[in-house]
Image (cartoon, rainbow, N blue to C red; front, side):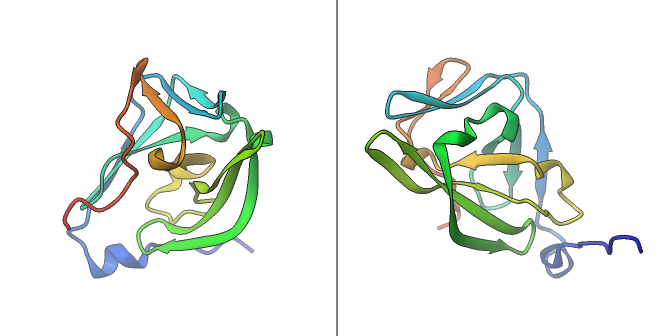
Length: 142
């Protein structure tokens, strides 16, 4: 028996909504409590209508031993169900600071196996070696 398609219901209701991905040739690093949590030279950049761009990092480029899975979940009608992790380093933690779509809708298969970080829940994010402003992903139309 073959797997059933997993189409995104959001695109059916909002055909003008746009999500694009690209693999820019940039370095991307996430630090928390003196440790590098993620470091990659091949992030996935997701750009979505009414949201700020978000960098995603391949799971192989994330120190998963510093993350603890939580029960928190959210739903996106364009990407599917997201699950979350808390970053724990020493005595500090950042609750639900990391998310991923383990079974994304068919329209966005490229996000599978990638994780994203809330910039306002980590100590620093560097893109091409430059410290970024601590603004998390979110809507830009409010």
